[in-house]
Image 1 (cartoon, rainbow, N blue to C red):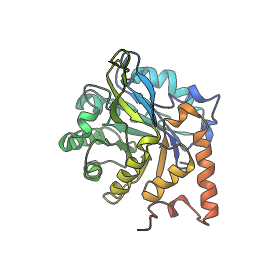
Image 2: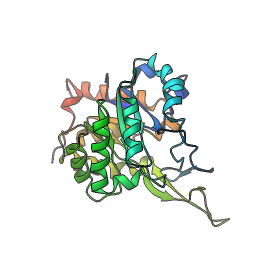
Image 3: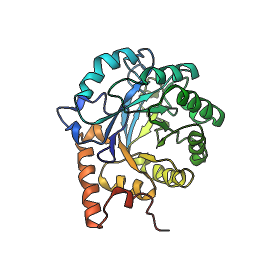
Image 4: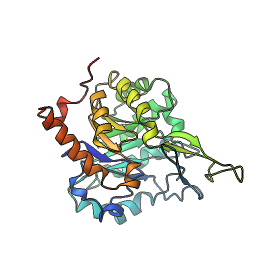
Length: 291
């Protein structure tokens, strides 16, 4: 990538939704909204709500499916120089493996992000990412079906994320992305009903940043493959924290909803930091925590 700043999956659509607001060619990569084999309608509304320190979402991985993405959305991205990483998911092992295989060799796709950590669907997702044996199986199956760079998106809902990262690494992952959102909920006290139709959603935003930072620091000590830091980045400061803790790149999500230019500001901020500290490369910053 031309720089280490990416758009996190599920927060930037398929790129063209933000193209009038953000120069896509300046980004390191776009991780598109999760794609499954067939179209998925997602959860019922309401499925997003602002909360203190962030937001809850229970979108349910709504997406157009493989065929419509490749023919209806990917051509737009292929005209840009930004790298395209496709977040993929499935309801079971076979679907995970098949959708990965379908993308193998598709022009304009530069990598896959394997989502085994979504808290908002009733099968696949978090069920794979919190079970060591299932994590090993799904990563291994997908690895056999694709030659594309494979990023495994891990769940934060485990006590030892480094152990799951080791499993992913051992079964063929090229990189780790961490963290996904935390299961959470909100209640309307006047009606005494859940705010979200799904009852539970995923908490993201500034509130989860310190937790993500700790998990990335722990995981970086456990594996040799690169880590993409995700969680509550709203300025260059949080992105730089992730890199000092051991992340080689960062992905920005919730901040895109409040300020679509956040990624551009983070790119400029990281560059200014490197100049100020007389560092020649981002690599000089990665894992530089002094303890």
